[in-house]
Amino acid sequence: MLDIKFIRENEKAVKKAIKDKGMELELGELLDVDEKRRKLQNEIDEQRSELKKSSKAKPGPEEIEKLKKLGDAIKEDEAKFAKLENEFRELMLIVPNIPSADSPIGGEKDFIVVDEWGEKPEFDFDIKDHIELGKSLDILDLERGVKVAGFRGYFLKNEGLLMHLGLMNLALKKLIEKGFTPMQTPTMVKEFALVGSGHFPFGRQEIYEVEEFNDKVKEVKYLAGTAEPSLLAYHADEVLDIKQLPIKLCGISPCYRREVGGYGKDTRGIYRVHEFMKVEQVVICKADLEESEKLFLEINNSARELLRELELPHRVIQIATGDMGAGKYKMYDIESWFPARKAYGETHSNSNLTDWQARRLNIRYREKNETKFAFTLNNTMIASPRILIALLENNQQEDGSIKIPKVLQEFVGKEVISR
Image (cartoon, rainbow, N blue to C red; front, side):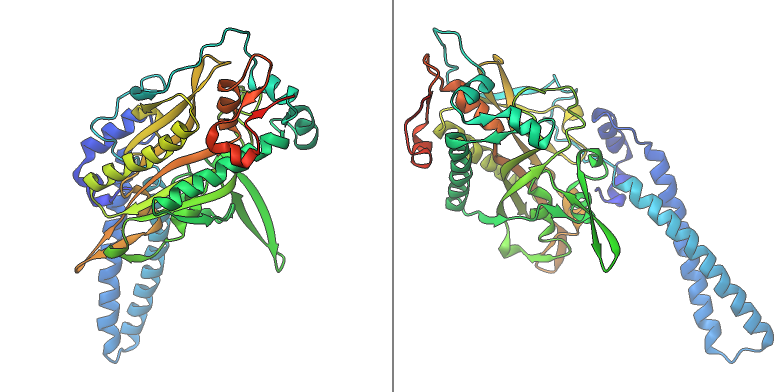
């Protein structure tokens, strides 16, 4: 969420952001609603002041009737104001953040390659994809996964599960060493957490709803697609001391996504599934672009360090405005190399959202005698089983076995997975 005062004073820049991000929002409608609510608020304040002054004197029958009419007018205007305020709030929630000056303008294919690491493996034999490898080594079962869970269901087995859990442990260990507070986060969250993170109203179709009944009263909760909403909402409605900043949190959680936006895409294997595990990085820092840029690169490098230890070729791309989401000021993706596809695929997503999320969640900090909204950042540390695709395919050998990267061997208990 942007500051309405900023929007009024920077209408041209906000309109450009709306256009560059490909959003459907008529800014004039928001400004018109804002003007009406401010005008009505002033009228209500004046009416209340008049009512207060008049009620101090001992009124006669005429004054009593006048006060009654004034009171009724105030109630009527308050009802109008509540309606305008709700309309204003809904429009404010879809106003995008202003992207950084160096963000490329365009859509999904207009990204910029920032960096590449590692040599793509060359094979002198016909390679297998992760589905064939997983089945032949008895570490992945898609058929029974579909039987039990439906479309995009899967079972990880034997060394496949041990690799999966090892990755979570490696990610947590590395982030703890870097000063992050590890947290097991709630998966089932209230609506405000998803509104605050910006997943609502934009991505509502991707989120599973869960109905709970408490004393026969229905309450709707949601299965989060990442630990980010929970980690951010942890400090909602708080005023932090500047000495606490930056706050670095890492959350491990199961994640759930309906993948409505990915309908028809990546339907084979475990690239795009409905449930997975993830370690997420979230940082809350002071409102300083230079400091947030340093932290943005820091959390990006943390993920890349782990990929280098896993010996996975990858690249970093800067996402264009039309593909970066409403709340993003700046966004990088890390894409790992998938040999069977002969292409890179997204495995990490890194974002600087400045104060866009903090305003929605009312996360502030106090510096001297001034209270400010914080800046927030997030990045994937590791997400599995998608990353297992890269690990299996890049480390396959001619006999169908898989070499285990050295850092994972202690978790798997062997150097090679064989039939």
